[in-house]
View (cartoon, rainbow, N blue to C red):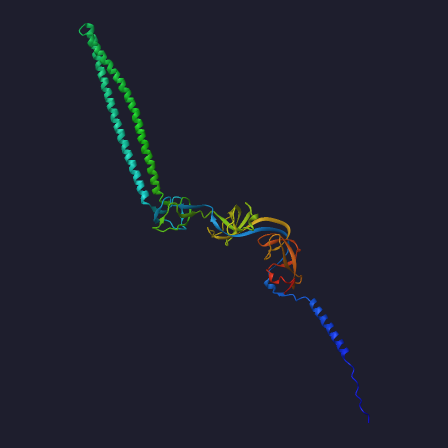
Length: 417
């Protein structure tokens, strides 16, 4: 029989080393390969993004702002004097004429002042009448005295003539004849003096009457002014239009110069737009504007631009030139678009969610098959309300995503489904 002889095992260390080396090489290669692979592009629902196609042609630059319609003709009615509301004769929304009384006020002090002025006029007129009567009596008395002197002169002339005749015949002494002549001369002098006195009296009387008449006229003017003050307590519209505001009620007190009512002409309206101060720099007088009243559009032109900004906006007034749509009324909310300029033969696309004029932005350009989009660096030019000029980075016909894609800033490519 044969006998089994145990064989000596060969050492396996070298084989293990070879296997380990091969495994290490494979693991390192796999790791390097995986590190060279890119992350899979994220998928975006195509229905949730807003896209547009780059076009070449004219581009109209516009700015847009919200605003209201306001009347071109506004008449504020204020109280000339403090008073209390006694009666409301017209209510807001009512058409009024220039002489329509809106509110009747009362002020006892003004009314008493007017009555006192009337009393002073009456008193002055009575004084003028009395003065005329007194001066007329004085004039008549002077004329009567002058007539008496003339009668005495005529009698003295007759006596002097008779005495002269008697003296010539020797029946009367020369002394008595000279006395008759002196009497006649005295009367002539008195008549001359009294005649001058009558003339001076007439001049003085006229001056006194004129002075008193001027006083009466002055008091009449004051009384007329006081009557107007009372009449002004009846507040009138002043212009033809529609009463828009009247905030007071019967019994309320109105301060002097306090605003009581507002009357407007609803047929002549203008638009007052509030344009963001960052966009108003290119707005100029005379530029064309379109006002949307929600019931229709009407064209106009820029007529005034406020010099200062308030709350981040600048007020721009637009004169409306077309026929107003139905339902247009003061304080109606409108939307206005102002045309700044027209650019010819430029590349343009819808305005993206982010990007200022002249800025460089990142947009996703959609592939030709529409299944993906690649990030592209785009330089913007001038902007409008809904469009922007493309200076560099896109070509005519390119389709880009305009929605806010900031959540994908870490990737250069996305898939669309």
